[in-house]
Length: 290
Image 1 (cartoon, rainbow, N blue to C red):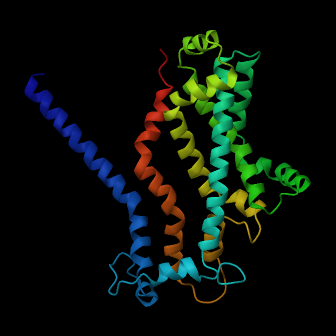
Image 2 (spheres, rainbow, N blue to C red):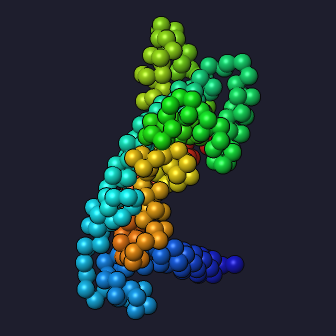
Image 3 (cartoon, one colour):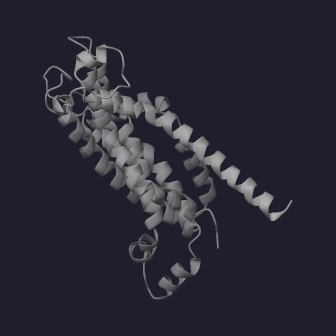
């Protein structure tokens, strides 16, 4: 095969890949388009049936209603209180689980404790335990601790369930760090936490980025734990959106529902748009040793 034929084949392969990816992009973005377009339409336009059409009259009043006055529970509070419930749950849970994962990954990867590989195996097993299995024991534990139906209880649940993932992320990242870094620090008299704060964490940017993105999206998008362990005052955003959409009273305001669903998805969408490339780099950072 000559150079010209190889070049043409490569060009056609690139065209095929671009067309294929474009088709998939349209397929996956179509629901978002429908939600966006119909969230700024009057309800009468939606009832006409053409949900793909652009609005004849553009309005943001349904976004304002979804945020401020939509009927979620007994009172028409809108989604705002539940949004802040999610923020108060996500931020501490991400910070705590990331710190614990970094510390435990550091110990398992670099301090060569007895049965470290067995412990890593148990942690890997724990990372894939289905949510449903832990519901009853977790409910019992929260009841004993007096944290049932509280934001603190939800934080504890997500920390416990997420620490297996964060430990594995950091363990894989730290396994590639040269042991000489720690040995030289020990020779200089640095103790355990000094090495962790001054040497390990400054070399953990990629792993921290992965765990923060992973934990933030998982915790923000969680519905099961929020519905099972939260009460009316602590339920997160995803539970509130479900209650908004599944309400059986009054007129079905689809424009308000669409606006609320987009609000619930915006934080995680923004995270992936802004820092998605760092997530991929972080995942790959521990894939090659040496």
